[in-house]
Image 1 (cartoon, rainbow, N blue to C red):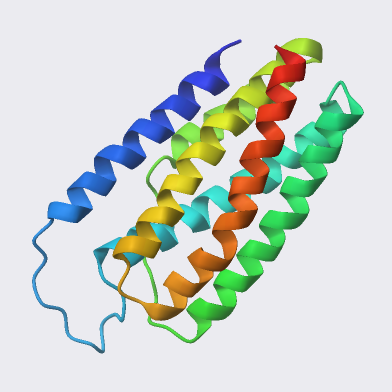
Image 2 (image 1 turned 90 degrees about the horizontal axis):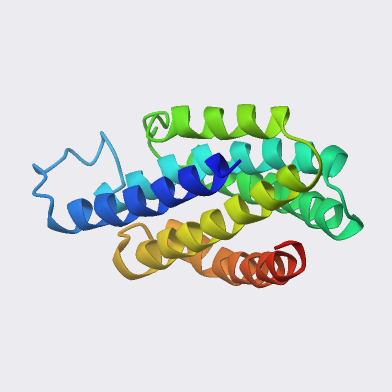
Length: 181
């Protein structure tokens, strides 16, 4: 199935469109006691908070269903890396004002996980890897946007520290893609 790649493409398109909307959004002045984050920061936090559990869930599936040791090893890296990223982000957020729970793309992620659960063999491997390529590209764009446009120094530093890991993940999955398809 090409569903995972399709939804990965949707994620990338949505990210680009929403990033453009954020860049041009006119937001009313907020009371500093309400939030410390600007619109870019809020979008970054909500998308990272949504994407991280997806990566852990998809990675756990690939650890058991992946057809090659390389895919299972990459999946393990995704699980451990995203748990670490989630913990680091949560530590920052504990010191900040609350951020609304993520909702954008939640249904798409649920559909992707459901699709992966039903797939096996080479179909699973190809869809998992293709989805990872799309996800990592979109994730790199998200983090680069936060670095360039975010207003919270802690989130910007977090994005700067995490982006090289995302770029490494992308390079690794591109190598996998060359071997699976």
